[in-house]
Structure formats: C-alpha cells, structure tokens
Length: 95
Image (cartoon, rainbow, N blue to C red):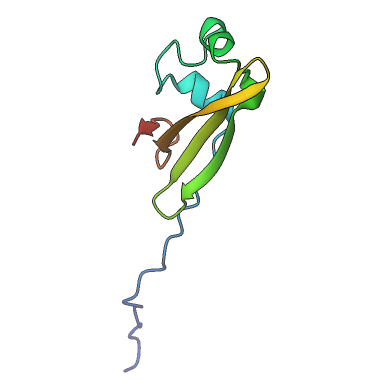
C-alpha cells in the first residue's frame, strides 16, 4: 500500500543491569540496622569493614551475599553472612 507505514509489533528487550553494591553503600542504606557495622559490634566479632566481601548469590534475581569471617585471637571461629536483594539501589532488602 502506498503511504502506509509498518509498525514493529515487537518491543525491544530491556536489559536490567544491576551493579554489585559496595560495603559502604550497604552500610549507608541501614538495611541491616544501625548497629550492624558499628565500631563496637565489629570489634566484638574481630572484624573490620575491610574484612567484609560482597559476591553475587543469584545475579538474575539481584541477590548478593555479604560475608566476613568472625575472628577470636586471630583464629577464624565462624562467619557473618547476610543475603540482600539489591534490585532497587535506593532500597536494599534483606532476604
């Protein structure tokens, strides 16, 4: 047909890329409470902010694993571990 235009019925696929959050951004969000990263709490468990790590637990669902060893006299006696939904960067949620 002359003068008609073809409209593509298919919508482009949107790719949602979520960045892995930093320890500092998790701390500032207060999702784990105001005392989770406090100086006294970290000292009690033999931890520092640098001892914490973040890794993807389920990247498709935007779930990260936050973890750090618990130390007593330089010996590892356990782990601190939390899972967070980071799909909304302005509102992290504990899973």
